[in-house]
Image 1 (cartoon, rainbow, N blue to C red):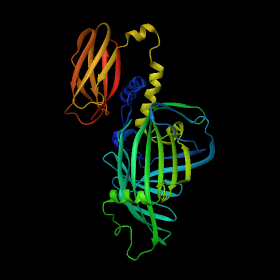
Image 2 (cartoon, one colour):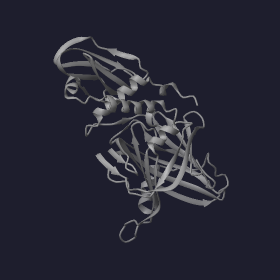
Image 3 (cartoon, rainbow, N blue to C red):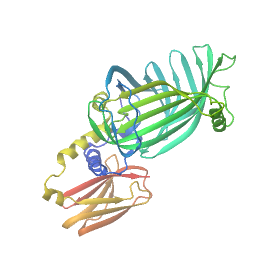
Image 4 (cartoon, helix red, strand yellow):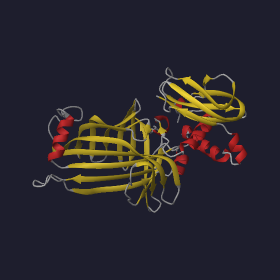
Length: 395
C-alpha cells in the first residue's frame, strides 16, 4: 500500500538522530515525546494480539517498572486490522466488531461501532487520544449517542472520558523481555446506558440530544448505576501500536439509600500482548519506526566504550526542550576544537547552519526557533571529528 510521504524519512538522519537522543533520554526523569507520526493508527495496518492471563495494571508514576514477566499466554489470538472509510475516518476490526474513529488535528475520537447485535453512533464523539503523548499529559470530555440492539431495542448512552499519560518507565513483558522508554496511557470511562422499545422515527441521525450533557451526567452518576471502564495502553519507542493492554469493565450499582455508597461488580477483564518483534514483521511498511529501531541498534553498536574515546566525545546540553522561542545549545569540549551547530527537519533538509567557530572548554550558541513550524527536528553538533545528535521538539 502506498504511504504518505511523511513516513519516508532519510535513514541516516532519523535513525542516528533518534538513537543518540535515546541514549540521553535514559537518564531518570527525562521526558519522552511520542507523536502521531510514530504512534497513531494507520489504514492498511494489521497485526495479531495475544491474550494474556489477567494481571493488575500496576502503579502510575515516573521511572516506574511494570513487571508482567510471570503472566501466562492463554493461547488465544485476536487479529486486528485498520482501513480507511473516508477523509479523516479510520475503522478497526477486532473480535467481530468494527470500531469507527475520526483522526483530525492530532486527536483520535471514537465515533461509533458495529457488530452482529449492535449498531451505535456517537453524536458527540469520545476523545480517546491526543498527540503528542508525554508523561502527565491529559484530556477529558463528555460524549453521547444512540443505537439499535438486534433491531428490537433502541439504545441510548452518555458518558465522561478522561485520558492521562500516567506513567513513564520500563515494561517487562511475559517471558522476560524488557523494554525501556515506555509511556503508559490510562483511559477511564463512566457511561450511563438505557435500552427501550423501538420508537417510531428514532434513528441514528436524529432525535437524541441531552441538554447540558456534563451537568446531566454528573447528576445521574450520583443517583443511579453506571458502567466504568479502565483501559491501560503501554507504548514504546519504535513500535506504533501499544505493546501491552489491559481492560477492566465494572458495573457500579445504584447508591445505597442509607450510606450513599456504590457497590461494584466486575463484568470483564482482558489483557493482551502486541509483541514488538511481531509488529516489526507484520507492519513491514512502517518505515519511520523501522528507522528508530535501526537507530537504537546503531547506538548500541557504536557507543564509545574506552575511557579515551568517551572523553573525546563532546557533551551537548540543550534547553528548553520542547522549545517555543530560543534554543540554548551548550557544548563541553575536550581541548581546543572547531565547533559547528546544524539543525535538520524530518525530511533530512538542513534548516539551520551555525558559523564554524574555534572554542575551548565550553561553547554556547542560541538558535532562534520562534518562527519555525511545530514538529520534531534533529540537532547535530560537530566538534572536531566527533559529533553528537539530539531530537528537538518545537511547540
